[in-house]
Image 1 (cartoon, rainbow, N blue to C red):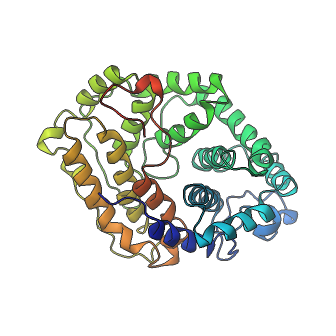
Image 2 (spheres, rainbow, N blue to C red):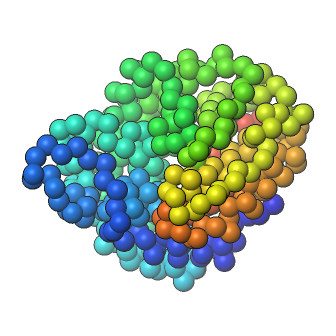
Length: 343
């Protein structure tokens, strides 16, 4: 099984340090209300104006801080801290926060960017540094948006892109576990309302620009939400033919035909995020060894290509870190059976 080593972590960090402050090209998520809104990205987003787009910059910062915590002796760790001291400060956070009060901003980065900002805040709080405290107002603003949005989301969004509901709630729930019991309860209630009766998943994936597995992200969320026995029962009904390698599409890495095409390059992310999901779901499962082998095949298909082109290099290292380190939310204590370790 490929796991995170200092050399691999250093590679991920160098890739991301190379683009976290690169201002152009940049894809804005913005509604123009007048000529006064036509401003450079660095004016609109004092922190998250690199990495091609806002959400990639956010999770690029999550990746860098995570690597610094896991490997504090890496040569890149000092550069990460120096840059964080410059960027993750209250004045810049206030500028990011102010953007959320602009007209037509209610849907800004919903829900993918919301969730990654919460993940970044949670990671920043693990460091002996002022970064977590600085980011807190922004995190609280996005948590409030989740609390307002989830009750009116009648149907979950199951696409394999940024709008996927289950993936966002995996990250948001982890942030809320020690900070917002009401949000945890809301996420659990909505997840069960949307997904508890799902049976015989056909896994109609991949689509041409997926970077998330609709099937596996749903299963990952339910593994966090349900107690271990209930999850085992649910998962057996959700993917009842897993022992026969069905649905077959979930067992085979996807083909990436053009890594310079931003949408097609998403498919490298699908391989990496599937590897992460399979490794997490496999822990304690009777097919654990087989599922881990499936995860390794997905990882091997895309890990060599993280920096082939900027369309992938501005974000793929985050998902490579998830897949190789088994990071992201740990399975909570209530969901862990004797044979199912956390993580």
